[in-house]
Length: 198
Ligand code: ATP
Image 1 (tube, rainbow, N blue to C red):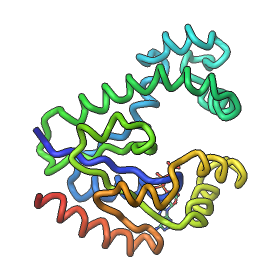
Image 2 (cartoon, rainbow, N blue to C red; image 1 turned 180 degrees about the vertical axis):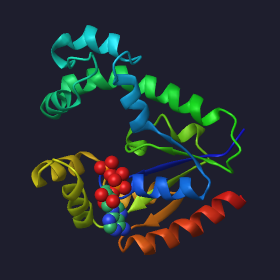
Image 3 (spheres, rainbow, N blue to C red; image 1 turned 90 degrees about the horizontal axis):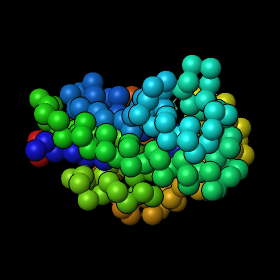
Image 4 (cartoon, protein in one colour; image 1 turned 60 degrees about the vertical axis):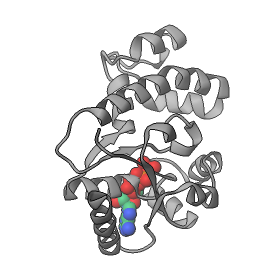
């Protein structure tokens, strides 16, 4: 079976950027955010269960999940969050495993999971976990740059995620993303070489 590494990190740390760079170097990438989007698009596999649990209120006119509306709900309603996760997480996990285990010519597969350490269902079948790390203030600045969230929301999300020190403790590999994109590219290339040679 091909080797599968998890890739995780806090909000805005640079997971997508690192995944894209590794993909360009030859890794196969399985992205659980993308899987979640597919599952909740119109006719997605998760929609019947979401509709049953939440009614039509959270579907848009095309029948896809209204992500902004649902995000606002689960941000303030813990029970709704748990019900949504109970529907989505098992489906995402199943799809990610099946995608990651399908044959590939790539030297390894990277499975991108934002809350990898928080969910416990990934560690047992992954061959190691790479953490993308940067100081908290850079997380905030980068997230504000590219999303509609305001600073207090970003900090609230960060407070719900595992703290930086614990994440680093659980890492098998760390990519420090505290400098320029050029610096990051160099570090990613070194990591790719090591992973591909294993
Ligand atoms: P999220 O958890 O929100 O999905 P993420 O961890 O996937 O975020 P990215 O989307 O890769 O993070 O990066 C967040 C933003 O910061 C993006 O706009 C990205 O282009 C930018 N960015 C990432 N790393 C750097 C860097 N080293 N220098 C400058 N900009 C960067």
